[in-house]
Amino acid sequence: MRVVLILFGYMAAALGQSLHFPCPEKLTYDVEWRLISAGTATVLLARDAPRNGWNFNLNIVSAGLVSRLYRVADSYTINTSDRFCLDHATLDAQEGKKHLLSKLTVDQARNKLAFEQHDLIKNGVEQKILDVAPCTYDIVGALASIRMLNLEPGRSVALPITDGKKFVHAKVTALSKEKITVSGQSYDTTRYEAFLFDNVLYRRHGRLQIWVSNDADHVPVQLRMMFGFPIGTVTVSLKKQEH
Image (cartoon, rainbow, N blue to C red; front, top):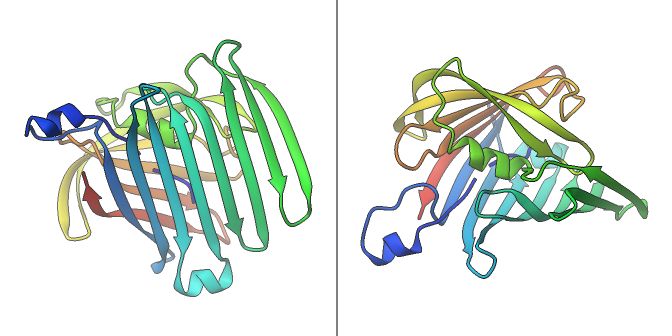
């Protein structure tokens, strides 16, 4: 359940101009699993002026029946360049009986990524060093870059993506132009598919599709992860957007 976004534009706000992507924003999503409300995800995107980059804060919290079956409380902070290339990330993931603290740090001069994960329950440590591309995205930064693509249906790109354990060039394809209704609001969107599963970045069999609005915000209004039994389909729908 990780997925989501970005920002820019203090000058435009100061001048009273309309904001458009990328700009500082807060996106709130409802998470649905098997037609059941499963929790919320919030993404806070802020400008990192001293570094001329961006800061992402993603929080995912389960709710209701899902929380009783498999509690999730994930807090993810990411620092990127102005192009959303990964610099540093920290994930504090409490999922079910697991509690993992992971850190990713990119050495831009050497194109190396250092990954360190602490299992706070079993008191174990996993470490890894990866060769990465000069501009490599984590999942959140990759989603931000998809918002900048404006691909026509049938066109594809390959994005350099890492989860800390593996580095890949993942294919992203624009599938179609679609009008969808999310939280009572209609959006003209482009539907993308990101090929991250089936032993690309993740071993699990599945599909990830993303609906991005065709307006100036290019906001991901819906994400759908389709897995086999026993997980099934998880849908993440935009509830609120705040600049």
